[in-house]
Image 1 (cartoon, rainbow, N blue to C red):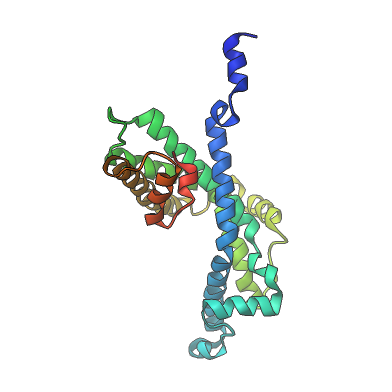
Image 2 (image 1 turned 45 degrees about the vertical axis):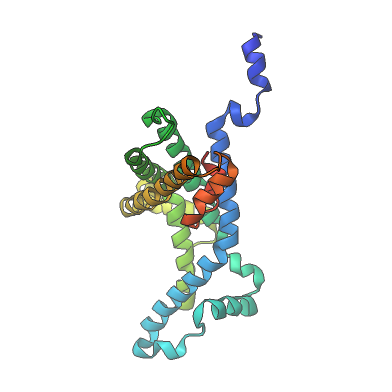
Length: 248
C-alpha cells in the first residue's frame, strides 16, 4: 500500500468522507430538533383537525363542542387522556422526513457552494450565488423527502378520521408506505411534490442566504473568527440554531 493511501486511512472519517459525514450530522441534528419540537407540531395538528371535524358535525355550533382550547390546554388534554408519551405519537415519519430533507439540502448546498459556484477571491460567497444555491438545495432536499413528507401528513390525518369515527387506514409508518405505493405506485409517493418544492425553495432561499450573509458580515466587520461560535450566532436570526452544526 502506498504512503498516500496510508495517510488517507489515518484521516478522521469526517475528512475521508465529508459528504457522507455531513449527511449523517445533518440527520442527527434534525432528529434532535424534531424530537424537541414535535409536541408543538402534534398539538397544532390536533387543534386543526379538531376544528375541521367539529365543523363537519355541528356546523356553526362547533366552537361550543370543542374539547381543547389553545396549545397549552391541548397538550395537557393529550397528557391526561392518552398519556405523556402520546405527545410524540407519529414522530417516526417526521424523523424520517427531516433526516432525508435536512441531509439532502445541506449536502447539496455545500456542494454547490464549494464545487459548482465557488467563492470569490476574498472567499466571499456572493449573494446571488447564495440565493440560487439555497433555492436549488431546498428543491433537491424536498424532492428526496417527498415520500416521507406525504406519509407524515397521511399519518397525522388519521387523528381526524378517529375524531370522525372512521376506521383507521394505516397500522404504522411502514404500512403507510406500502399502502400508498400499492395504490399509486412510485408516482403516488411523490404526490404533491410541485407545491412542496416551491415552498422549500423559498424557505431555503431565506434560511441559507441569510445564514451565509450574516456569517460573512460578522467575520469581516467584527473581531469574531470563522469558528463554531460565529456559525451559531449566524443561525440565530433564523431561529435555526441547528444550522451551525451543519454548515461551515
